[in-house]
Image (cartoon, rainbow, N blue to C red; front, side):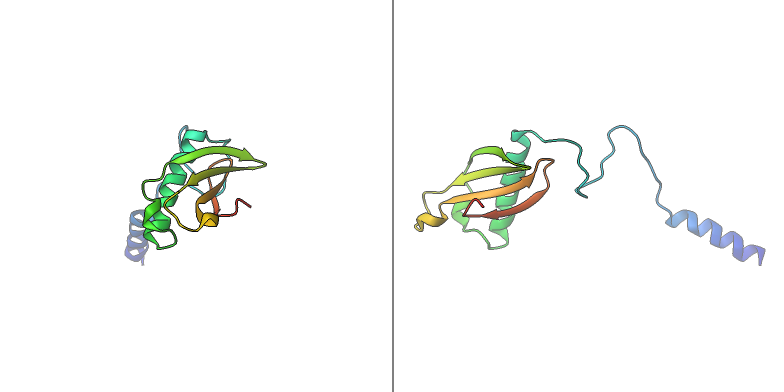
Length: 113
């Protein structure tokens, strides 16, 4: 019985994940607010989101080389705007990507609402 207990104890040490905390640790994108990110960071995040929307087929490939027109805060969120004159439908030439102030992706659309 003692051997079984020892084996269980030792094997549990192999499967336990170490818990580390301290300065610079990251909570990931679990929604924890650590303050507002910069416009440069939100534009970088939006550019990555545009790439993923193209890869998933939700955006036309013509958006791949389009640069952000700007980023601004609107209430409690960032809005990053892109303009693509290659799109024939005028209602779909401007893309809006929304993030929380701390950089969590919210949504993307052509209406800005």
